[in-house]
Image (cartoon, rainbow over all chains, first blue to last red; front, side, top):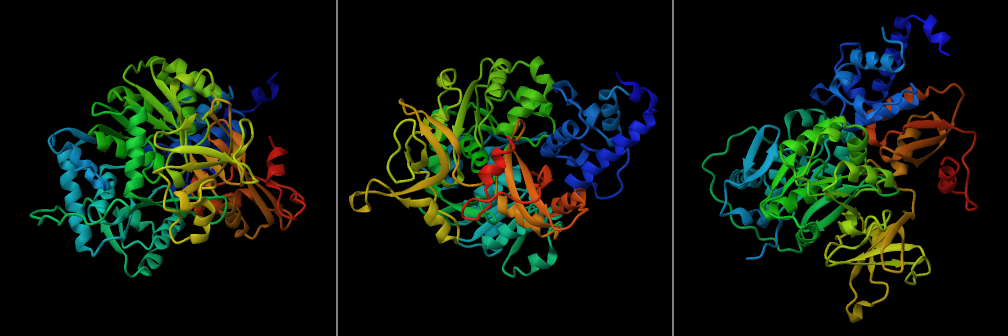
Length: 97
Length: 505
């Protein structure tokens, strides 16, 4: 039963996901994401995350956020920006609007 | 004349200057353009003072210019030292310094990231920026004077301890590796090969060399998502693809378009740089029913050692096969005797791809390159390569990888020295002891895992990881730092790495 998630506002979940993703980016790619990271920060453009970075992100989503990323999830729409990644995480956690 | 120097390989297409050599993004380069660019850069290197035997470090992203620089170094009797641009400035400088490079061929923004002072201290280093100056009216260069025994390349790779070491390869080594791999993969002029792996990695370099030797087409690709690989395979009707376990993980688990894309042109795929899980091989064969799968094994010190013929895959899915053409492999037990079938032994390689050892490291070299154990030099025994990899052989001579004889980690195709990661972690001042191990991982083969004893309570692990990420390339950064009260030790008082791993799998 997901009684707890129903009572939480999606914005709280979004803030938590954003925070977790920020932490991941700061620790794995400090050069590319050392400055301000917000929802508009691009993940794919200019190779901000390389293939290994994408891989690490996948492992992070699995290990830390308990999200199972499937084959079909690896599309630019989910990974373009920090914002699209947060939305993806929320959809996976079933709390997206 | 048979080719005996690396750049001689370019002569195979002398009569067909319009053949496509390299595809980089939307740009296509012919063999004629390739040869002209090599001559032009060679001229610049000579003007910068590069002479026979000098090392030319190449710090470039996967690109046409990188291919040009590799051949240009050979053209001027120099030794190329390719550097993976995903390394951090500290490691780049280590390679430039350790190799004693005379020139660094790079791009403005890549040199920008390096420490000016440290670079400046290398007084004799000429920085050659590519893609800047148009070359016109060059005088033709004199022919190269090297012979096949001269050094062609130094490839930096990690062992179980310390900083990366440079493996010295002669022209003869590189040409033998090219000829041997081309033979068993049956690569010909009509092949179109996709190059995903870095040229700083001997396995990745081989795609460039076999392609040029045959006058085939090489498509360069840096990818972020698995679907980009599928798109390139389809669009360029790629016939051959070389990958490491991580690439197969991408294709089977993170490339949604692969199930919808038929790739009838893809003649073969090859794996090296670590074992591919059997279920991944199975899935690849379902997704690519007409493609032959070659599982291979090699180490930079001997370039390539074994491959499993695709027709054996069903019978021996976990075997790395038998010796590549022109080479012999045997297993040596700890007591120095030849291992019998089923007995584990150190894999020993003999043949024309045995390297010349580690640059400026005679002691390390002596551990890896040794006299033939069963045939004294007086009766023709030569130097062979002790891999440090434990293997067993079945009754029919097929080899199976057992493990490392040391603590070296292999992750995403990269060789990682635990001590290099440990020293970086210790430098944070937060730990009393650290041991770094590799744990099995579906995506990368092994994931880097640190087991540590904190020097005080309340340590901020996230912050330590952040610090470490600034000095280590991402593939070396531990996925996790696990705090314990004490590290297990062996009866000799050394950290018990085997136990640390065994307790966590």
